[in-house]
Length: 279
Image (cartoon, rainbow, N blue to C red; front, side):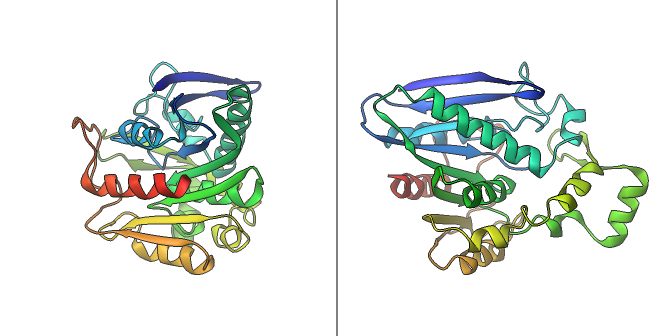
């Protein structure tokens, strides 16, 4: 298997993006699956590398990347050394990042006959699923979509009107990272950007307008994004497939760091379902 870690996508007037690729030369016409990490996440979190290898072993070219403002850096892509960048992140920046990664994938694999650049799918975890849904609805290059413990609504996550007024007055609010204990900033620009792009960032609207195969995978013990959000997305797109993983939490019973040689049984179930769907 060909594994290429921390490839650097440089961009004019934008922060660079780190990319990983996983593929085998033993399969013909491999579809491509681009993985979008979630909030307070990154491409190397927990068992995501093992997941990528397993999907690639099924004959799928897997691409993972860090959103440019996720708080990591080129030198330190794990965890959050750049909290200023984290605070300046927003949904439209993530959509722009994903677009640039899709462009890069189309160029990078154009000359490899065993990888099919006309067959690109997206896998989004948690908040990354919302981004993937929005992108799939507006970009005809995307042929398949997987929502992994995905969110159904961005707006409801901003808090109450009073909380938003307080946020506006101070210009920043902080969220504690339970694992790293960092005070992670969100500048008010995040909400302003959402208001400017409210229609584009409406996950329900995007889901209703999609006409590509859509697999929704969710754990029934997910306390971070409730299973009702998966059910809502499934209802908005009746042609989608909803696959419930029993006893699985938001990260399918894995954690950071993940030191086991194998993924959890729950994530393994999700991997098998994703691999079959993408093929």
